[in-house]
Image 1 (cartoon, helix red, strand yellow):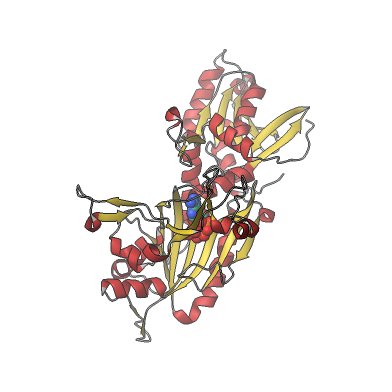
Image 2 (cartoon, rainbow, N blue to C red):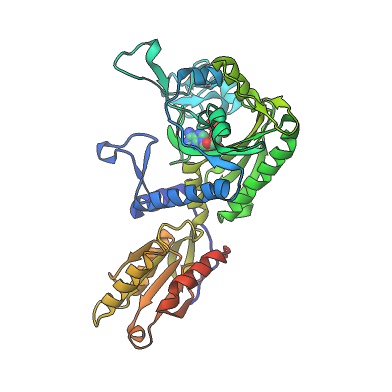
Length: 449
Ligand code: ATP
């Protein structure tokens, strides 16, 4: 079969339309006209998101005997956010255009517009920047007063810090050790655009690593490299990844050193994950505000100290966008465009699709049985509608790495056609060997264009 090499060709319009058409991501509350910047994950999207989360969770907890998990509540005591500095510092500078009424983050518009006070969209006059706190506020209980105020957490990290002592006392971990958490976070972002890249409600995958203060450089380097390597394991192309070090003006209020891992999205290089040296800032502040002892006693040296923290903070929903952008590919096959999502097989929402070549002569029954047997091993999909070539293309478009076709030969020798998404190569495999063969293909997978 003649085909050109992968030509990628990804644009946001193509991605958004594929995501909607095939059930990855829908606009929130679409039947009411949609809620801006909120998105729902459809049948395939939720599978993809869960697989990314599981991949991260395994990487952090199962593959490290000194990292444990927690799942803290989204609503926390309001003092947490005073202690963390978010009430005071978690702000973005906001400017409004008096003419077109658009809102901008002052740090995200070109400096010359700011100096001249003119809107980058319509040239109208801009207001002076004013600080805008990104935390969503609500009230617990029926009375809306200052005493009932709670915030929706803007990061999952604080849930880990306030549980530091609980984890120490219950899980026999010793420094250095980490606590991992995945969950929702909320930020009242001034500008949300680019699909699921920046939303007010999103999910984070954070790991906080507690260390001796003298070892911060060493562990910072360790996690920085390890996290970069993780994205390669996830199947992301290395040339689309890079580091960006925060300069003094960019550093968050808690950070001594920070590196972003950036990905080249269709709209440019942007942050995907932050690796931060948060020092003893957070634990010390919680000691101060709670009056509780959050120090650590080294039982060998008898030294007591407040640990430093190296944080790895990744966006789960943002990683979904990275995985989608990176997987999208178009190629020309015999004069026709083939759209193929080149997901790592471990992430693909459907691992194996099973088709009867035709519906008649008992082929559907055989195919149904094979599909049912495979469910125990993989996520499967059965399809008997339309020409076989079209069925393959439908699976290519959702990134299914393996297709199994039952034909007349299957009745004679109990073999099927196993077709590979990336190369479109087809081989014959005995029915009984399908799970082992697919398992091996997944384990050995290396992305090829
Ligand atoms: P930015 O400066 O772009 O607003 P940030 O530097 O404040 O982001 P962090 O606080 O370091 O971001 O958050 C860690 C990770 O959480 C980010 O790398 C990103 O993947 C994810 N994240 C943060 N804000 C959002 C959001 N509004 N929508 C989706 N993901 C987000």
